[in-house]
Image (spheres, rainbow, N blue to C red):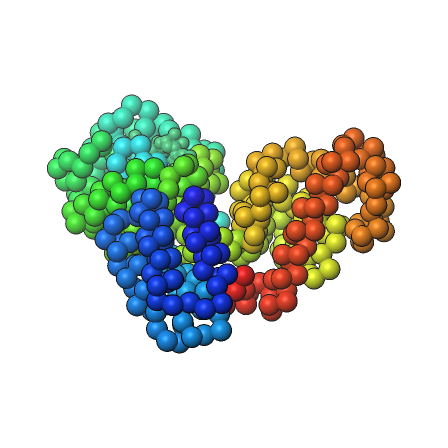
Length: 442
Ligand SMILES: Nc1nc2c(ncn2[C@@H]2O[C@H](COP(=O)(O)OP(=O)(O)OP(=O)(O)O)[C@@H](O)[C@H]2O)c(=O)[nH]1
Ligand SMILES: [Mg+2]
């Protein structure tokens, strides 16, 4: 998500922060590069124009330019503006007071409505009883697709029987949900290749009969600015309450996610990050901005950890991330937790600085590397794990032998470990992760 934009911005700001003194000219030059980077990420050009102008206004003031850390101040301004751009706080679903509360998903064909309906049901079902209904009577097997997904997550799914009218199906499904005691009903609707009157008319009728608590527009991030234009149309024609941006795991440049709030005026509430049923995340503007600017995202990491491992382990993990004497033993424990949480690739971008580390880049997607690293650390003595400085050439050879790796592997592991340790120290010397995120120093 946002990798290439993130890389570019990091490069621009590294230059900026390297300067002790800034003047208007430096700032303008940097902002020209920011502008290019945003446009290349496919952010709406009007949004880019306003964004850059706003940052410029805030950045060229005396307080900033004459401060002790002008570069960091400018980066902080960009960070804050990015957060605003994406809607400031993460927007929750409003369920309303009716039971069941209907949530309706709308969007073009293939954007991911059906998949998202099931993913969303899975998320919500941690707190409420969720029912699913497909109003797609057009695409063969559309209903069966939802039914299969519903069974997978053990949610209730409405059986339309011989009904062929989408509006009637929705009305009866809501009635059934009420009878069966479901608290939320997610309505999956049919998609079309383009916005057309027939589809809109149908969606409007469903809206009128069901009065959804929320209408969520499902947007395919891969379609870039089209997703924004289509969102504008959906909002005009039926009214939407928020957006779910799917396929953010693909090579989409992310511009749509950055433009939607500004252009359509509705917040992105969730992002889809994979085909699997658990690949849906609450969208946090603050964290996303930090991620885009390469600060990593300890909070997301801890949250992900919490849903996979128990809270106690997660807390320990957070503490060891913050610990100043981050030993090889801590490192190994960390890697074990990471392995438990799923793919290393997903996780690694969330750890501050990791995304930037060239040394780590090569081993990111390879979970086998993780096994190797663990084996190497396992082959060390406790003393070595607690004090890496004693691991000399002889010990390296022994460790390589014991773990079935090479001395080069051991060297690389130690080099990476020392980098990470340095980074941890830096975070701690600045008053912890929270303060890092708030104050935005690197
Ligand atoms: N990589 C990735 N694929 C996704 C995501 N969300 C959905 N997909 C895939 O997109 C394709 C279309 O998804 P559907 O849920 O069937 O889309 P739809 O909007 O219901 O399509 P129609 O009912 O035909 O309008 C499927 O192959 C999904 O697996 C996502 O977040 N990431
Ligand atoms: Mg569908």
